[in-house]
Image (cartoon, rainbow, N blue to C red; front, side, top):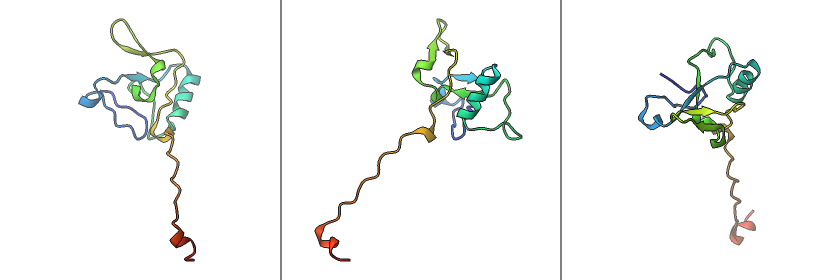
Length: 107
């Protein structure tokens, strides 16, 4: 069973809505692994350990990072780093209030 370890992500391999997602292991290179940990905003400690079952789902990678193999499996390109998260979305600018003339001179 594969779960996504990114905070706030509820992707699960056996959920019907997540069947088309791929789940990727952390890289074995310590420098690349540390970069993934920083990007997903997790700290290794008593509540989070990286094991062979720790995965990040394909929702967190851009389309140019994922390559489909001849057998139909999704694989990551060398050096790919997760960059798509809910906390990275651009916020819409706040609307400005238009005051009518009637209330401008009220105060």
